[in-house]
Length: 202
Image 1 (cartoon, rainbow, N blue to C red):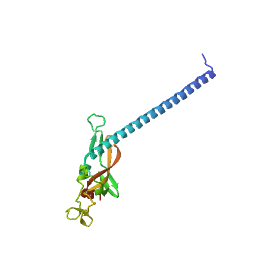
Image 2: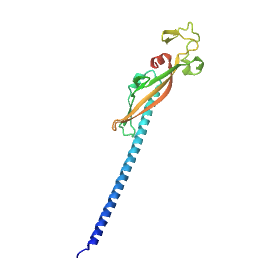
Image 3: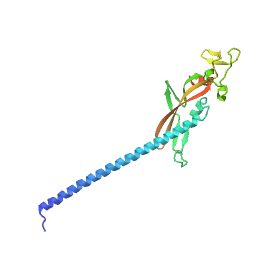
Image 4: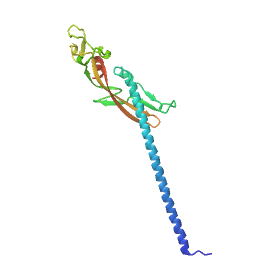
């Protein structure tokens, strides 16, 4: 049985149209798949960043929980904090102290930005933390001195043994598997003896 040429042409057109629609549907499916994968990757990246920031903040809290971090900075700088995020007994994130440049000086670890001597008028003798800051009530004959650029000078009645210092603590949380990292910086104030402030807050 012979099929008229017009019907053969119609069947060919239907096949071409069907193929075009199939290609369009395949393109839409591939685009939807790419969009879905991008969303999953973005959510995964955001989750990793949040976990890294949490690990960095945990490390900073541990540093701040040591009241003498301001006078044992080199020891603190050598510490590496390991964090197990998902509780599988495998450390996921490593937190260290990166080298940062402040006022032209590149160093790792907590950095003292400035110091200010504590005036005697701001101390309360009823507060145990303040009592250790008192010097002598009179400069002459006290035997107490403070270090200055020219040597040692007698402490006058308005000076105390303490100084308020301002610190910045930069840390870096790193995932060794993905080789990605995030930096977190925390500022804090610490009261220390003036001799320690002179050593660490040049």
